[in-house]
Length: 76
View 1 (cartoon, rainbow, N blue to C red):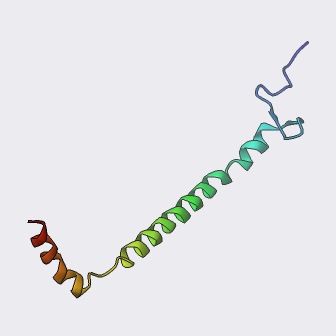
View 2: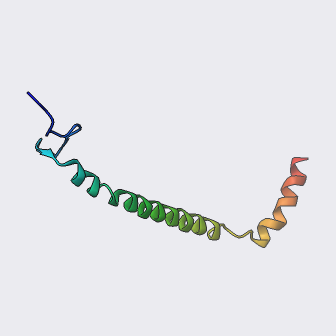
View 3: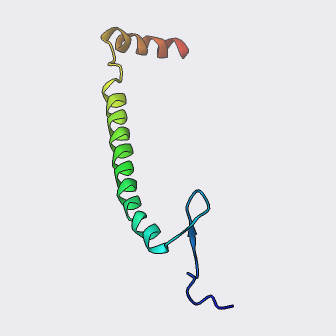
């Protein structure tokens, strides 16, 4: 019983059929590109979110700015 023709590390498709390892490696090449696209997407999403939070910070109103020293004086 010789296994000279059989692949050493066979790969299997979802139905359990053996596949050629070369075709599996050829399909895995696109994985790096999709990871890069996902990284760019989340980086842009975080940049936009941070920008919205930064720009949406409430401005200090003049009435609030005047009342803070009075409140500090009341604490003393």
